[in-house]
Amino acid sequence: MRAVRSAVRRVPSAALALAAVTLVGAVACRPADGSPRGLYRQHCARCHGLDGSGNPRAVDAKPGLDLTTSKLLAAGERAEVVRRIAEGEGTMPAFGDKLTPEQIEALVDLSYQLAGLPAAGATNRGGDDDGS
Ligand code: HEC
Picture 1 (cartoon, rainbow, N blue to C red):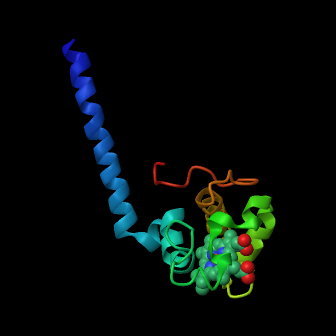
Picture 2: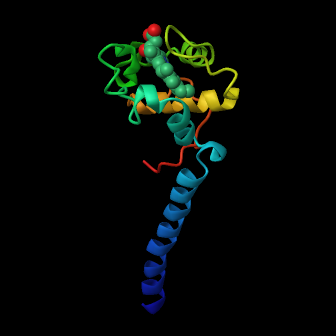
Picture 3: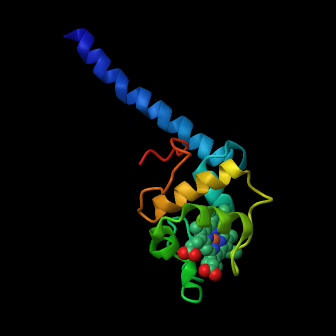
């Protein structure tokens, strides 16, 4: 019984340590850690909002900022989403020279996630560290 109890006690502290490491990674090395969330915070959140629903100060004027209601994302046209992020569209800037193709793929996955949709044609799984 003692072995079982100590095993049970060890689990939460291991989980806590893992959470702490993840948190420190996310806060301390935002640009360098390259996690999709870190990239999103760095490059996208100022327009699209941290949760994807659009910067509240801008979304009324530009409804396209709200990724959670995006028809493009809902249509599942992954290649077109990739193209828009790489080449830009309207006032959406191009990121093809700032981000690698892998980073763009990861941000496409994250865009689908923020929209509450399954990632269409996902190629880049498991890179997200938010634990949700
Ligand atoms: C300067 C503000 C700005 C930044 C920064 C920005 N976007 Fe956008 N984004 C827009 C606007 C505005 C649109 C709508 C364009 C249109 O429909 O003309 C848009 C559209 C999109 C769309 C397509 C949604 C749709 O339905 O058309 C996706 C996906 C997207 N952005 C993802 C991203 C990602 C990922 C990043 C970060 C790499 C990012 N955006 C950075 C302004 C921005």
